[in-house]
Image (tube, rainbow, N blue to C red; front, side, top):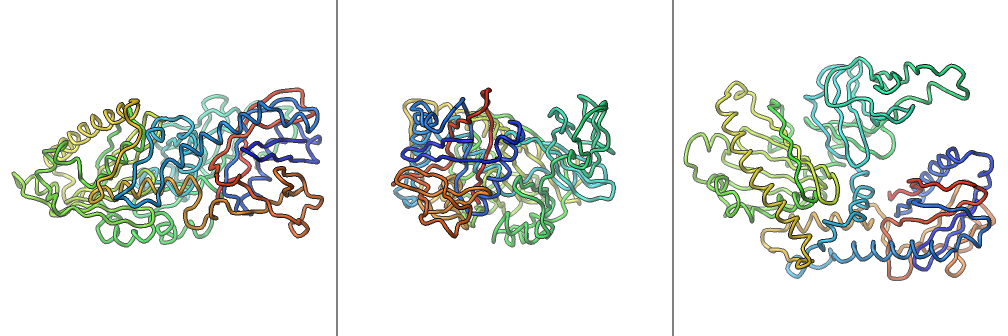
Length: 523
């Protein structure tokens, strides 16, 4: 098999000697599994996607100008979108990211791959899976997941997709002894094992133990259930302190000290669908209270905004504010003497005030739409005070409605040709700037532990190796890195491709296909 991978001035010729031994679908699976592992082992900090293909009878056909054009166009667009923001410029001189970060479908796809499909993400609460056989479901991007406790009480998580014909298995929340596919009745245990496959008499090469649900990494910190869509569960993932440090960094201690992981009673959930990019809602949260006196006059009356402060950690920013003069004892009881607002990159907020804690999960639904899920928790001593709970939730709902109006108006403004970039207010919008810098680093691949951009790397594959000769990459004669005489420069001079769409051609196939094969993951 020969395939051409296009960049601005780079061509890669890949050979797989085993291609003719496997049908198309088996080859694609083998290609994905093998190269994903090899790229990761070699710290290759770029994610490739095969998005189109056409028939190629020899290697010369793979360098067709149309394919070159596809690669170059996407390269130029990706580079422009990402690098129009410069995180190295101090906030006093910095411009905000361009409006295209909030409107462009390609940039949104890039965010899903580079931001949301990596690392730990909160998805629910221990209250939802307190007892054996309880479960809840959710979605992030194209990933459908189900979290449950099996009969022994072990916490588990899986892709919520039947292995037969891809139907979703479960929906909502509830209690089940097993998951039965509503499409054809295939049945899975709460441990993910396939228990029953209906009407498969005559099937060949079918191994029951290989057809269970695909597991996900799941852990708990405080009352939060968090998922990681990369890799497999390890012993370290079962250690709360390790997971907490990986998710929250050095902010974990401060959050614990302020009652974030205490045993509060779960009260209720509110969900809002907002016509804005997910980052618009995050930006609004991270403006250091800038908008509060203008948009939330009722809330502002209960806060001392002159005391507002912001502290940044690795992937967390914490804003805090003292309580202000209030009009009634009820207001003081709700807001307390101090409010803490923690933003956990990329899309989670924890708000601790008085006897209350509420969390906000911002779920991206597209470049111009998101869902924000509010969950409310309360000090157990007030769980029977229905009047207080009702009034508090009413006040909170008013604030959320005001924010929705703001965010949807901002999104419309971002769509206007009159706006492209803006500026920061240096003394209050530090957390917003921190968020944008983290996003840039996450996409570019320069976050801690990731190799510097433009770094030269060698890439080894199971059956062959690549090295450079001028602008062309070709197979080395040996599959071993030891015998490779040259290093490969991944990126053209002066440029970086955070996620490159590839036009790939496969010879000896009489069909055209499209696939989302991702052979390389940033570490």
